[in-house]
Image (cartoon, rainbow, N blue to C red; front, side):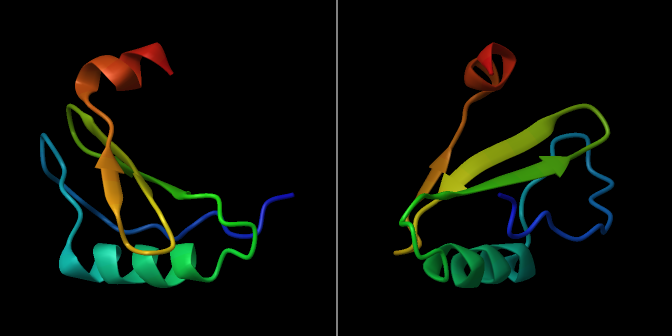
Length: 71
């Protein structure tokens, strides 16, 4: 079951990074997950991806480029 897919907005960077707005929204969404699983966040840039997990406590785990290639 999918509860939330996300919203579309631009990150016209070669190597994207989440904005403070992104991070705040992810923290709210992650804290709202009743099953305790981390939120998976993805930002598509012009040349690269930003992929990370965020737990309900706001702890972040950014997946490195090698890890993204292995997913």
